[in-house]
Image (cartoon, rainbow, N blue to C red):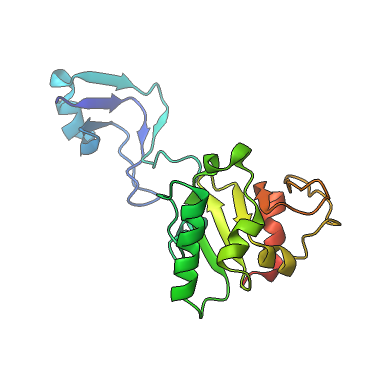
Length: 195
């Protein structure tokens, strides 16, 4: 594969804040292979020459939306990503909780939110696995958590809890929380009581 050569702009190397190669950069297979005069020398044989028109070219990751802290927490608990049913998730959580009785709070994640109708998971389903310790499972979108009744109790989330700004607490017909907290406004209600 031939090179793509970027010219006529400021090119940041990413190694130091003041490291620049304002002449050119050559890229082959996604990797910078030359800068400055060496890159300009490849211009005549390049597959493509991109005129930056005075702009800036900077190295960067392409992820515009990540949840690294939640992803890390997820790895510390039951791994439910591959579970194909609510029953499998509950069994996985129970097995993990039984093997880790010292863990006060149980965090797991990336459950498939399509496994329950309209993504509405019930706290009582997790209560079957772990009735006496809080369980917090993140959905694969990382904007929703499924919690058991003990997590709701410790966070003082009940029928009298108002709907939070920038969040949602789906409820049963009697007004009690179902067991799903959606978006940061609701999920963050757990923060004051989490370790």
